[in-house]
Amino acid sequence: MANMYHTRPLAPPPSARRPVDTLRPRDVAGFADQLSTYHAAFAPLFRRAEQRHWAKHYLAGQLLEVQRKSIEPMALAMEGGNVQALQQFIGVGAWEDDAILARHQALVAETLGDAATGVLIVDGCDFPKQGRHSVGVARQWCGALGKVANCQASVLACYASAKGYTLVDRRLYLPECWFDDDFQARRASCGIPADTAFRTRPMLAVAMITALHERGALPFSWVLGDESFGVNTPFLDQIAALGLRYFAEVPHDTRVWRQRPGTAVPPPKKHGRPTHRLRVDPDAPSPPRVDALAAQLPLRAWRRRTILEGARGPLVAEFAVLRAVAVRERLPGPDVWVVLRRQVREEPELKAYLTNAPAATDPATLIWLSGRRWPIESAILECKSELGFDQYEVRGWTGWHHHTTMTLLAHHFLVRLGCQLGHRAAALTLPQARLLLQVSLPRRHLDAATALTLIRYAQQQNYAAYRAHRRRRLRLLDSS
Image (cartoon, rainbow, N blue to C red; front, side, top):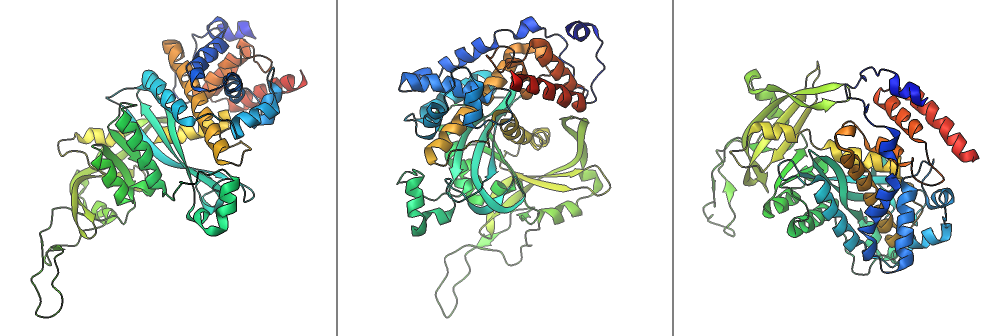
C-alpha cells in the first residue's frame, strides 16, 4: 500500500483543492511529542500534579480515533486511563478556567493573529439533552434540531483570520426559568454560583467581546454575528461603544432611512402635559424595510462578486451596498452601511447586513465580510465530529465549563499542528490533522500509510472508500 501510495498519480479532487502529495510517514512521526509541548504551556496553571496529569490525558483522549468521546470510552482507549479520575478532573476538579482560557487566547494570537484579516465571530450553540437535571437544560429553541426541544444552549466566540480559525471563549446560557424559586434546588445541585444572574445570549456575547477587547488578547476590529444578534440593537450599540465595528445579518423587516429625517420637540398643546421628547418630522417618509429597499434598487445598483472559494468551486452572489440611517426607538440612530446580498439563481434568496463601518470603507471589504461567518459553524462542527464536543456526560456547572475549555484547547492544538506543517500541508483540514496525530499516540494509533491514505480519499471526495477503509481500521483497533 505504501509503494502504491507514493507512486500512483493523484487526479485533481472535485473540490479543486490541491492534494497533500508532499507529506511522507517520516513527516508525521513524533506528533505526540508536540502534544506534550502544547500541554506544557498550560501545565503551570493547574494547581496540582494530578490535575496536570489528567489534563494531558483528557486532551489526548479527545484526539483519539474512537467512536464516542465520553469519558469512559476515552479512558479505556488510553494507556493508564482511569475513568473515575477523569470524571473527577472534569466534573469537580478544583481548577479555574479563566487562566487557562487567557493562556489559550494568547497562543491563538501567536498561531492565527492577524490585525489585517482577523475577525471575531459570535454564534449560539445548542446541544439536545434528555432529562431535566443537566445545568441549563430546558425546552427552548434548539438550533441543532431546528425546533423547540429539550436542550442546553451556549454562546461561543471564534477568532478567524487568513491563517485559520478556532474557538476562543464560551458562555453557558441559563434560561430565565432557571432563576425561579422552583429551580433553587436544581441550581444548587448543579453548582451554579450564587451570584449568577440571568443574561440573554447577546448579553453573554457582549461580555466575551468586552473581555477580549479590553485585554487586547487578539488582534481584531470586526465583530460578526447572525440575525439573533443583528436584531438586538443594544448589542450592536454596545459593540460600537467599545470602538469596534459590527457586521451583523438582520431580518428582512429591519427598517432604515435612506436620508436622515428631521426631528424636533413638538410645540406644547393647550391642554395636557407638554412633551420634551424628540419626534420625527411628520412630513418625513417612513423608514422602509430592507427587503423593500432591495426590491426598489435598479439593476445597475447590483454588482456580481465572488464571496469565497467553496468545496464545489467559487461562490458567486450579487451585492448592493448603500449608506443609510438606522432606527433607534422610532428615531434616527447611527449612520450605517446596508449590505444586500442575493444568490445568482432563478429565485434568489436575499440576505441583509448592517454595519457601523465608517463612510470611507471600501465596499469590497463589506462584501468580503459577508462571507466570513462560516468559520464558527465549521469550528463547532469539527469540535462535535472530531473532539466529542457534544458527547460529554457531566451535569454540573463546573463540568460543563471544564469540558468546553478542554475542547477549545484540543481544537486549537490541531489547528496549530496544521500551521506548523506549513507548505507541506497547504490543503490539510482539521479532521485530517487529527488522523495524522494517530500515528504517534499510544494504543489507539494508525500507521502513517493508513493515515495518509485516508487523507487522500477525503481530498479526492472518495467518501465511500474513506468510510470503508476507516471502518476496517477501527475493527482492527477494537479487536487489539
